[in-house]
Image 1 (tube, rainbow, N blue to C red):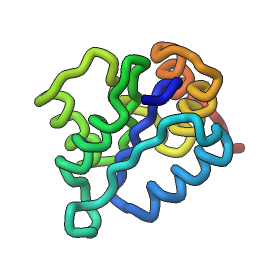
Image 2 (tube, rainbow, N blue to C red; image 1 turned 180 degrees about the vertical axis):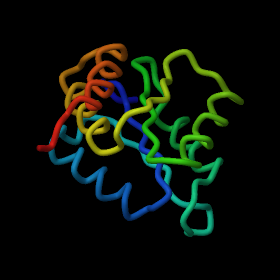
Image 3 (cartoon, rainbow, N blue to C red; image 1 turned 90 degrees about the horizontal axis):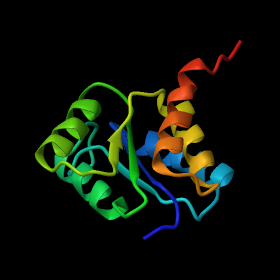
Length: 130
């Protein structure tokens, strides 16, 4: 169990999610729980239901979990897992994958509660690049 809100990154690509996880680790620190579910069970591109469920199970603790999918079927798969096994303190977020995950990780690293982490991730929609 971590002492922060945990983050689950759900992606079609193991390489993509590994890169985002590395970024979050360097910015937010090792103490933030960051779990991943990427690709299919056989290592291909896609989103495996059991991988998502396991990542959420491994992250689930009393402080809460935010689930951040990349796009398309990863959203649908994460939603299906949470529809099949509803949890009080697990929130599926519709946020930009990198920016939302980064905001969530940084704020989680401060020890913020689940609602504050969710709000920070949602604020990422307003982050302009130019």
